[in-house]
Length: 274
Length: 244
Ligand SMILES: Nc1ncnc2c1ncn2[C@@H]1O[C@H](COP(=O)(O)OP(=O)(O)O)[C@@H](O)[C@H]1O
Ligand SMILES: [Mg+2]
View 1 (cartoon, rainbow over the protein chains, first blue to last red):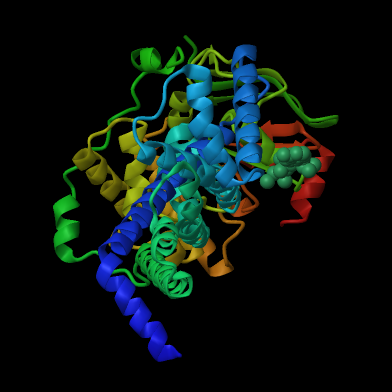
View 2 (view 1 turned 180 degrees about the vertical axis):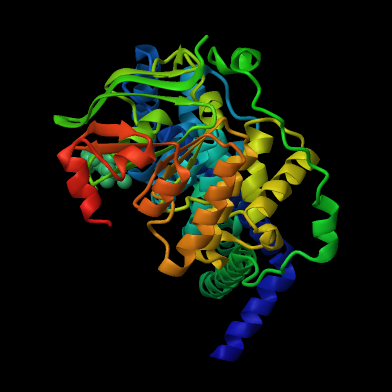
């Protein structure tokens, strides 16, 4: 039995090997690009979602932020709450339907669809990641005058990102598998190759076997890479005491300000919003 | 323009219906070392947080060189950069080394160039005795070391006034001294400081003025020699009796 399977697979491979490889290449490119873009979307949502509002802010600002939050909420619920295969159809046919322009490439639509789908999941992960960081660090940043953007990009998100790496990995693996639904709009990924080849030469099982094996290898490699990234981001456990050279370099060259600058000189930078 | 760096006028703060601060009035002039003492829950932290705008006051005003900072018209960030704060829980940036903790704000907020910021950071880390540890991450330091770095980070912004909220309360007893020493040196160098503390010896020896708070109001204030040895208000006496 096994022998027959391997001969069949060898047969398919000889004839269609390059096509399968090409499918794998498309799958990997789509999944990787969309995961990266999805993460960026998620991080941006996280920044927007956490812009602080206080009762002393002017009303238009408060209304604007409220609207932003509602839009983000709707985005997350809609794209998490519907099948990606439908989202693909919806966007692929919907955009030309309403705007009369069609996508010039199936790649563009596919990346857009998978990215915003991933973004919806990532937005929630990032929100959780931000909440997992002790509020004290945000206050420490505020106390030295850092604004929301500086605090988020410099302090909170790098830590939140590290905390949610496992979830990013999850999404990456899901994307490697689930981009297969993009065949619905004609994207030729790894799975689409199976449908095409089996349809032509009726080798359903051997081809399915190759697909199973192929996807498994891809996802194992992906999770291995993510482990490496996780380890890399953890950083060194030890630190070195600054050596003589480093200390000498910095010693004594700095002059203490004789007195704090009077407020008048600073008032231009201090007064008025930016 | 006023001679005071900071004037707090009729400041009040409530959380919902819970009135935490009522009609607080006091001034801070250059070089003042004001210690705020009082029972836990009396509103000391809330007062400092209002001054640094981490909380929005519900009434009254806070004048910084005569300009009210409680409105929405001022640049909060620029103001905060001039009013440093040291927290009980250090609040260092865990993702950055000691050096970067002290450099980041300078570069991003004060727009100091990197080399100058580094130099300044090294100077202040030296002042708190932490310059050997520039490559360490906060998680690798002891509480006392973390707090000294936090002080250096605040100093590196060259604030006009530095607020301390119980800077030694989260420390093991053997580390309290090293942090208080750093603060003593700062006071000696003329830094304007507003310190919430339970370290009565520090308040007595270092401060130029002591403020005793009870139930959200300033119950008594004056020079430490008076407030701490000969308080007028019986509540102050009662409070101090628990420490001495
Ligand atoms: N964010 C908050 N929400 C509601 N109540 C608060 C908040 N922060 C402080 N309080 C209340 O305000 C009072 C004063 O607190 P705090 O300023 O921390 O006192 P202290 O620092 O003197 O111990 C307490 O009763 C506390 O419960
Ligand atoms: Mg407190």
